[in-house]
Image (cartoon, rainbow over the protein chains, first blue to last red):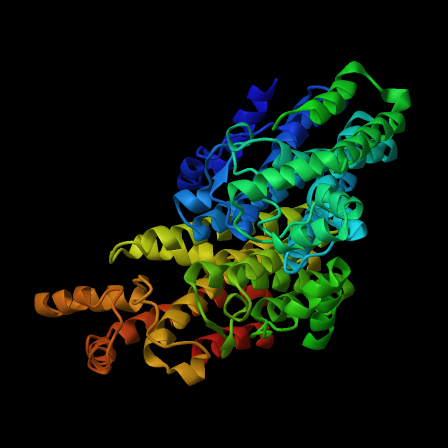
Length: 297
Length: 297
C-alpha cells in the first residue's frame, strides 16, 4: 500500500533536482503514519495517494529542519542528514521538500490546500515555541499541550480532515479524530523517551530533559514527588546524565505514577479520537489508535 | 506606496505568532524590488498589494535561509538574524514566513499559486546548486547562468508573470521581462561585490570569491588574462584576501575589461527585458530597469 506513496514522493523530489534526490534517498522513511491515515480514511485513489505523498514530504521537511534545530545526530537509527552532511544541506533539502509539496498542493481543492498550509504555519510556529520553552525549566501543562498540538497534532489533524474532505466524509469529526490521535501520539513519544532504550528508539533515550524539554511525564512526576525529589529533578535539567541519574529518573517516573498517568491520558485521547468518528469508525482506524498507543518506538 | 505592503507583511506574521513578529521586525526591509514590480505591473489593488506582501515574505524567508547557508553575519548593513540570534532561529523564522506566504497564496487563482510555488521550488534547488558549485573552482558560464536563474531570476520572473495575470496582461511577455531583469539584477550584484565597498553594500565587499562563488566578472577575467594571472587568480580562491590581493583583483577586473563586459551584458539583458513588454511598456517599468543597472548597492 505504501509502495505507491514512496514512489510518488521519490518522483516529486526528482522533478525538482537530481542531487536533492540522492540526498532524499538517505532519509529513512519512518512509520508513514500520516500516509496510512489518509489511505484509511479516503481509500486508495489517485488523489488520496497524491495527498499522502505531499503530507509525508511536508513531514519529512519538518523533521529535517527539526533535526537542525535540535542538533540531533541520529534519526530513526541512522545518522541524520545534518550530521552526515551539514546543517546547510538539511535546511536546503527541507526547503525543496516543503516547496514541492506546496506546489503539488495547488491541484487540490482550496479547503485542502488551506487546511494543510495552515497546519504548516502552526507547525513552524511550534518549532519556535519549542526553542523558547526549552530555555528554562517549566512544569506547565498548558504550555506543553499548546506545543505538542502545534508541533505534532496540528498536521495530523489537518491530514485527517483533508482526507475526510477528499472522501466526502465529515471534516470536523475527522479533524477531532486527528487532533486527539496526534496529541496521544506525542505523549507516547515522550513516554518512550523515558521508558525505552536507544536501540529500540533509533535515537538516544532520555534525551528530552537534557535538551531542555519538560515533557508530560516530567510535569506529572514533579507534581507528585516531595520537595527534595523536586529539587533533585530540577538539578538534572539540561545536564548530561550519568547512569545513576538515569536509573533515578526511570525509577521515580514509575514510582510516582507519572508514566502510568501519561499513558492513561494518551489512552483517553485515543478513545476520544474514536468517539469523534463514531459514525465512520472502522477496524483500520481503530487499529491506528491501538497500534500507536501500544508501540515501542 | 510600500507602506501598505509593509503593514500587510507585518500583519501576516503577527497572525502566526507574536514572538515571530518581534524577530521579523529586526529584518531590514531591503529594496522591495519584487513588491514595486507587482504594483507597477498590476496597479495598486487589494489583490496586487496582497500578492506583493506574499512575494516579499517569500523573498525574506529565502534570504534568512540563505544567510544560514552562507554563514553571513551581516545583511543590509546590520547583523543578520542568524548572527544576532542563531541559525536555528533563522531557519524557524524562515519556515514561518514561507508557510504563511503559501497559506495566503491559496486565495489566488491557480495559475498564480502554481507559478509562485514552482519558483520557490526552483529557488530552493538553486540554493543547493550554489553550495555544490562553491566546493571547487570552476569558470563555467553555463553553470553560472543556471544558478543565478534559479537563485534570483526565477522568483522575479514568477512575480512579473503573476502580476501580469492579475492585471489581465500578457503573462509570457512579463515572465520574460522578469527573467531578464532578474538575471541583470544578479549580474550587477556580482559586479558590486567587486567594485563597491562594505559601507555602501551593507555587507563585506569582495566576499563572493572567498565564499567559493565564481561569479561572472571572475569568469570573464579568467578568460581574458594570461596564464600567470590565471594561476594567481586561482591561488586566491576561497582565501582570506589581504590588501594587496584585493587591489590586485580590483585592478585586473578593470584592466581585463571583465567589469565592463559584465555590466554590458546586464545592460543588454535590461534592454531585452523592455523589448519583451514593448506593447505594455511604461515609464515606471523602464525606470525599474535603469535604476537596477545604475544602482550602487
